[in-house]
Image (tube, rainbow over all chains, first blue to last red; front, side, top):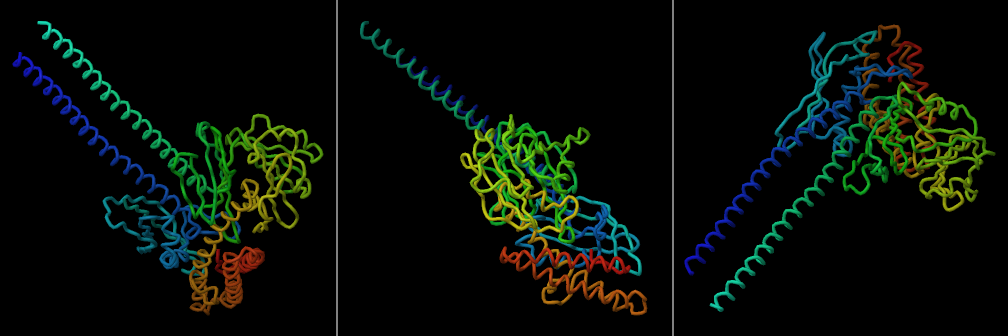
Length: 162
Length: 376
């Protein structure tokens, strides 16, 4: 009798042990799945932020080529404004422009006829893991280059740190 | 034997009780897990929806002069919009997640519950482009117009149903004498727009057929002479003024963003709050155009480059012609920046901002007409 009850006891313990092992395995699988799902979600949010920041930069009144009361030229940056934008952005970074651009890097690269780079905004995250750049081909208008406005080609780089 | 039987019976009973308790605990554990997962999924869904709405609004506001209709299928949720102390906020009511924005102006009713949203973006200029106003409404919000002015005609023309664009704002023009016939129908909200300046006043009775709607869903905006607007809300059966009357900071012209924003904003406080965002942006744009010290008549930014260009090319015929206009532009920009600072400090000082913007526009026009490098 004693032996039978002891066997039954061991049986019960074994069942419980197996149950808890299975539960633990399930928890570990769920944790791993959640970890990769969160990583994917983070990438998705970073891409969405990159696109939003790039769109905002491209249509910023601080850069666009305006023509008096008429509509602004599309995909055109006014170099005379671009040259003074950096100081304004730095001056009002914390209270204003960080809200628009967040942790990102905005640079204008002039390619033709001369190569030149204009650094407009840079705010790097302390622990940066990824840098997601977006590029837009733009024309660059410089009204102070000569008697007529001069147009050059280049691209706008908007990179987001995550 | 009897003792053994009794022991066995007790053992079996306790065995089954033990099984029942353990089973119940395990089931309870899994049920609570499922419930918490369900709640978490709901929260995540609402956060995703808020994020998507933010992206839609960002894209819509940046494409100027565009009208879009977005099928959200969110008729089971209420979208709320508010703006306080220069900080705008919108999101799904009760979700705990919202978008806060202190940069981009957004004008809409305080709450929208609709499976569709109508989005309209208009550029605001004072006198150069400061940003785009995003106007948000829904097809189940009725706009009742009283009075005939060029602006009211333009609004009716702009909001005509256009199947090609699928953009729809529910408008109705009525004679002030026929106000009692206005029926809200299945619309959730009614906004009366009084261009006569005198039909809707404090204490005047609200049209009979809209009295059954909740107070916050029946509102009015009155356009008086000289670009003054006043907001009203139904309180019981009469109109009650909401906030102070406001002066519109507008240079006039077609598709005047400041006027259209007034039609969609829920009240004076929200309108002013969103305008504060615009003024802040305008002060920074003035710095890009004229430099940080332009308020003290020290040119910088693009203006300095223009001055330096003409100083460096005295041989050019245009240099002598353009210099006086450039100096006039400097004065106009200095005045404009000072007016913006004064307006940001006190709303009472905003009235002169329109005239300084007009001065700046004239100075820029003079530069363009004389073939000089224009400021904008």
